[in-house]
Image 1 (tube, rainbow, N blue to C red):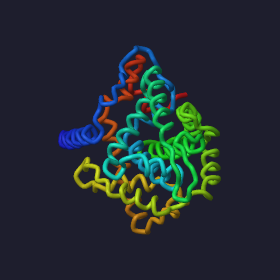
Image 2 (cartoon, rainbow, N blue to C red; image 1 turned 60 degrees about the vertical axis):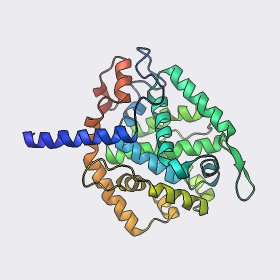
Image 3 (cartoon, helix red, strand yellow; image 1 turned 180 degrees about the horizontal axis):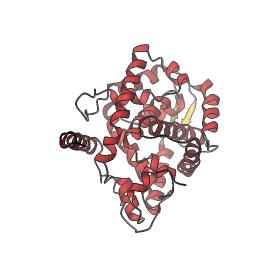
Image 4 (tube, rainbow, N blue to C red; image 1 turned 180 degrees about the vertical axis):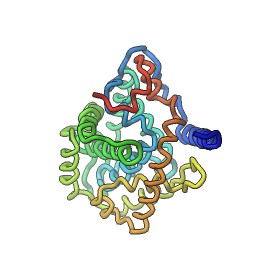
Length: 306
């Protein structure tokens, strides 16, 4: 690499780092990722989960994809619609979700247990009725499964589309590993492979719909303007890249236009091209600290486990 190219790369990674740490500040969750030494947490350094969840562009785009899928399920959407301040602070909700995923992925065992217990307490309080009078509860095992599967699908496809190739066997292993979190929260019949996820989505489609509430939440989500990490990247790039991960049936159900689809294609290419810079810029993040806690070199995360 020439000195000029190196200076451009250094400037870009520094800008990306500032953007990510401003948008998603560290050390605000109260979780200690550095101790006790040797504690592998729930997954550990030999897991696929540690590797997929270390890819920031894939996780952010995948999380946005998951939100778009979740708003199609009336009962899953109701908990957010009736019991959260998403209209005023959707970025705050994204940060809380990010903290939970990071914690359950990389924190020591005792910290993960605390996170799971806290979320279960919150879920127990989220109950209500849909406009048609039917009841919903956030701790309904079926709803917990829906939320988990949409997130796992988004994270996996985000990694696959923007960060690195994911072999079929590795993808199946990821679904099988990561369902542990959903089951701890109370989910049941959680898909454990790509084929099972495909069948699960097919089985769920009859109850999914794009209604007035879904449209309102999508409008709020579409209005989010995360700071621009690099010159030339539009403020909509991550949302459009998240939409690019949607299954075709979901894109049709949401009613995305041809123009929106083309924007997603362009954003996906852009995010893929800059993804390596994110890895360089965030080389001291939570996944790195977790590796150091168990005495492993962070470089192991760029290779799939045997």
